[in-house]
Image (cartoon, rainbow, N blue to C red; front, side, top):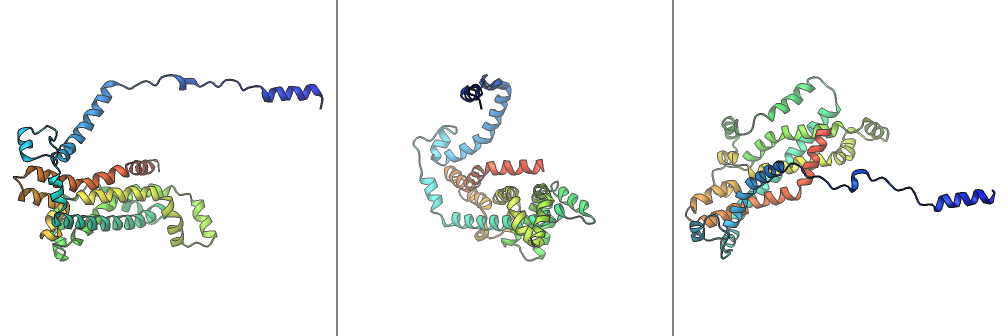
Length: 299
């Protein structure tokens, strides 16, 4: 190799690269239409204002609420929350809501995942009709069928029983679960299934080892939505549950409001504590819900 060639290569290696054209990266980002932001903030305020009023109202006294309904607590009083947290009734209703929510969520996710796997990965007669049936279930909320549903629950002997709430919630939660999970399972490449079959994996083995991990975002999404829906369900427990020992928190709020109708501050504190777990749960897993729904739409 000649010296001139070596020097030219060395100079090209040491020579700095050409400046990168950053395009619009250095330009200030334009804000959107102010009217759009105003509408968005208006909707946020409409959603958050009642929640803040209830939470802050629990830190006030009845005289403060009567004198200035929209004012901030002055002074802040924690006795309302403390009295509710010391109540055995509150924790009993909290435990009932946890049991109903967890069992309903597990049942909905397990059954929905199995049904979605069959609809997404296998071809058989009436497959389209079955999927359409689940899709049609989204148009019939539980409230519409509450009267015939109560008759069925009564015939099964599940009135005033937590399972009288759990089983219908699983049934009415399946349409949403199937609609969200089918695109996830359908998007799994068939090559993976063929490779698993070559390695000796059975259909159940492929389901547990490959399908569940790959569809985990959708499973988490339907689980969160199912739990929050079960936690906030009021109409079904109102029809099915009779004794206060089996009350869930939505029923407990109604009963507490009737019992302490004069003590507004205490009622607001009880209501805040009843809705707080669902709000925290939703806030923690909000990104997973959005990601799961986005994946379902893409699929």
